[in-house]
Image (cartoon, rainbow, N blue to C red; front, side, top):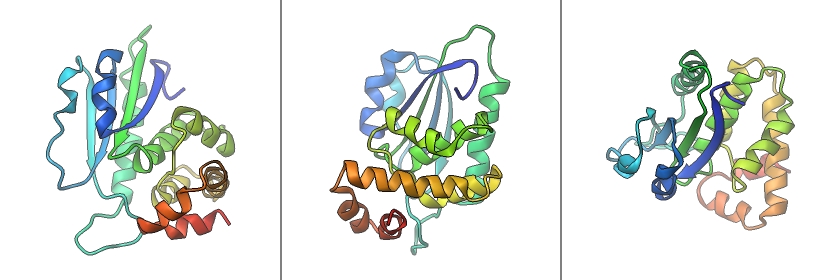
Length: 192
């Protein structure tokens, strides 16, 4: 688990957020595009702690778009530290991590948080857990590369990501075409 006080992990896209309002979400990590207006989807939620990061879901620089940067990953790790530091004895928290579709930035952030909390975790097992939480997971490779470096994994997390991509392509054969159409062909090639 990410923190002793967090017992439920959820990944979703923006359209799914309202359905989680009744589920007593205690912590939210929002990863959204910089130009997106403030989200109103949390209006049905009770009291919760929320951190918002703003960058685009890209893996190569593009004019006018914000790449995932080391500072963003540091903020994700700071968020993870706060989950443990703010833990209340006996609390049963629910962490929701979301991005636009709940496929790439949010899944990369969740794997980062999981690995941060369990330094001895097996990287392949983390991606297996991720698929159980969010079957359509396709983590942003730039974010995973930075997490690998920042958490001292010496390439093991990136190598496990290759295996994850290969698994996802086999399980969902439409993914390579979709990801390539979004400028993510380099990630598809990582699986081969």
